[in-house]
Image (cartoon, rainbow, N blue to C red; front, side, top):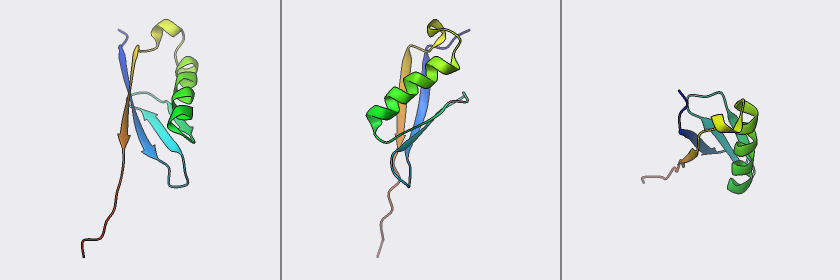
Length: 72
C-alpha cells in the first residue's frame, strides 16, 4: 500500500546550507538554500520511486532549528 505523505526532517548544516532526510525512507538530500533543497528533494524522489505515481502526493518539510543562548 502506497502512502500519500512523506515527511522530511530539515536541519541547517553547520558549514552552510541545509540537509534533509526522509523519515522511514533512505532519501538524503542537501541544498544551499531552501528553494534548491526543494528542487533536490523532487529530483531524489523521482530517482527513489519506480514511477511518478508511486511518489507521495504530500511532501511535508519539518524544519529543526537549534539555538543556543547564555543564561548568565
